[in-house]
Image 1: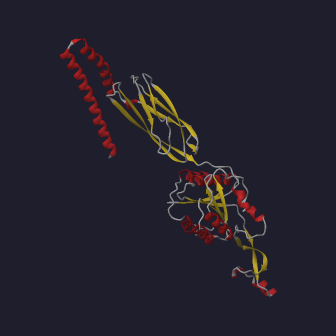
Image 2: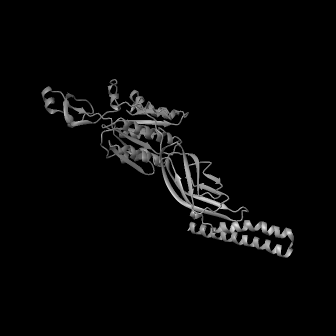
Image 3: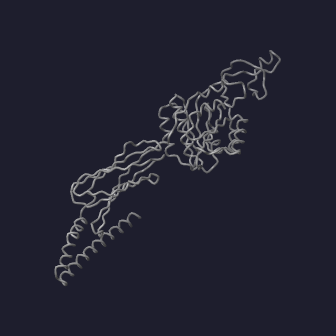
Length: 404
């Protein structure tokens, strides 16, 4: 509907300019006929070439141009600078005095040179370039607009060329110093927040009953033999699998959170680890734990497009969606704010088949407030590892968890 109205308006404007040109030409001729003399005819003959050129330009088809946009590559990282090249070709070498070439940029891409003035003359092929800096996301270049006119500014011609191209810009990432998560069990004998699932099908021995043991674990034969309550000892399965949970809250630290998530994914895949991804926002995205090479591409595709549109406290969504999740893995929660609601929700979800880690991600120069420090201590008391990391300082993420 809007396009149809714009076309009608453009046709009306072209008709008006054509009538105005005829009117001016007629006025100059009438003036020369009635006034006579050198001056009046000089004005008429001086205006005649400009009017003739305007008439010819009016019927010159701008749609005869063939436009192309060349990009160096389609998959980029946030912050990359690229140079885009536009090529214009035509068959009829009509003398165009000037041509405004405008590449229609996506809303979140900026460049001062995407609109340029060139002087084609009789050239059949023209090439121009402009640089731009890209940000994370999926960006769509819609088309290219050509605008020209006559010397007097009476006539104006414009042509829109649909030339859609989509560019995926992935988030930046850092190379993290990798340490297997299972290595943290080698340190000390303190209460370990990273307990793993006991395989109840494999009994490794018996021990004395301890408060909290299930009744099904009681070894009744050993109990009768020793006259002391004895429990079965099961083998423990250790794992380096990681489930990454991204809190897509609308936060000034969101881009830093996405960068850290990308860094975790890249490092885990490079070192042969298996990972899954759980993204909580307006819509929930769940990518199960796998070890295939396509896993990295799938997660990065999501991270390139993801937006901070979470409205519901993500811990509630996470508990609901992962209630039926039984795969042995550690869970790394990436957020930018720690509060009591988050700690209480995760404490209720601490399970025997994996451990929780909270990465509190901040932009550079953002201090941790007193409440976050208090709740971080509370989380550690409840067996949840908490670590605050700043943008650009992610390399020690695994080491810091091991030392927590």
